[in-house]
Amino acid sequence: MLFAAALIVAVAVLMRWDWLPRYLPRLGWGILVSIAMLFGTSILGFLFAVPLGLVQVTGPWYLKGFAKIFCTVIRGTPLLLQLWLLYYGLGSLFPQFPAIRHSFLWPYLREAWPYGVAALTISFAAYEGEVMRGTFAGVPAGELEAARAYGMGRWTTFRRIWLPRAIHRALPTLNGETVLQLKSTPLVATITVVDVYAVISKVRQETYLTYEPLLLLALIYLCLTGILVVAFRYFENRIPTRGA
Image (cartoon, one colour):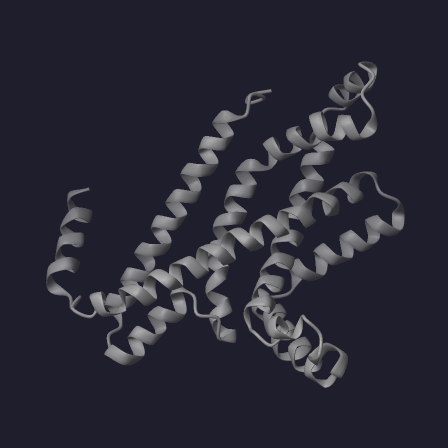
């Protein structure tokens, strides 16, 4: 701890930080963009992951096959490749269709951020879909049978028993996947989305500094990761089925 404290003091005193006030507004905006990307894609991805996991446990064979192929393909290819295929591939096809260019969607489709959101959402859904498959299958059958014995319908059993128990079992893994999602958000800078990584890259280009901006970027991501870990621990402790 003393060594870490000494290192922090040395970094603060011996390195150049005179550029920081000039870039603070842009850094603040970049952090907000990164946070919006993280929470937006994680929430959307989880909403897709629940049915992806559920159909692999209870769905007909064709839905099981589709979900399995989807998760396998997305998990087996790099996220950067998926992002570029959406932005440089699909995004370059849309302008060729007049119906799309004159639709209400065009002001959004010509921007870069929808493709970043789509790529991160699809990736998160594929990884978390496999997690939800395991947690749905891991909920004890006796609990579901007891719910049916009490007269609960299928939807009520799913909403009150099966889904909450599956989410509780998935929380530790969901924590790790969300942290990984945070670390994946800098990839959107490769398609011109201005997040905190893009701002730091601009700082490096304009100030010709290397270590100071990168150390600040590492500190920002460490703080965001710490907040995520604490938040998930809080929710884990709040769930009444803990230890069941």
